[in-house]
Image (cartoon, rainbow, N blue to C red):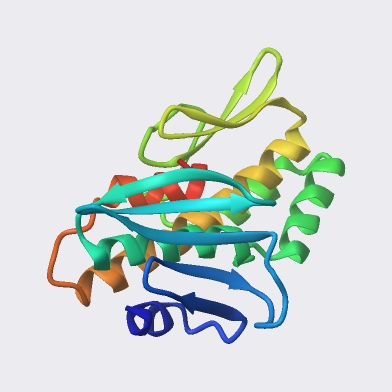
Length: 197
């Protein structure tokens, strides 16, 4: 079971502890007890994937397929530990906006992301959407708020960060799907990574 996780993650910081009843993924060394981890546990004919923070567990996914459970665990691990957004780019976007150069910030988004990733001005449930309202800026994905009623600067930075995340997980999904012999639920993978649901 561990091979698929190592093969997809290729993360030398990922630690995997497998026992008869469960698999635990966490970041750190083998000598520390993790406060944050992902657990795959078989319960009768189902695999339950949970996310734990300081021993408070939340079930994220249940499936009948062991390989699918591993992939969901990988997606949760990446959401917790991957930092795909570039902090320097975020600072540059914030600097443009603080200088009144919204067009430069928007041009950056236009030039660095395919338009299947984002929407500006109107909500598109399949994309990261930046919407200006009378109260501020909203950023949404799949009908859910990522941030709501924030400043232009904060909204654009969140928008950029989540565009990077969506671009990343779409690429990962496509790569995984090429290498498995079953169809993954794309919407579920994207929601799990972007919204944690």
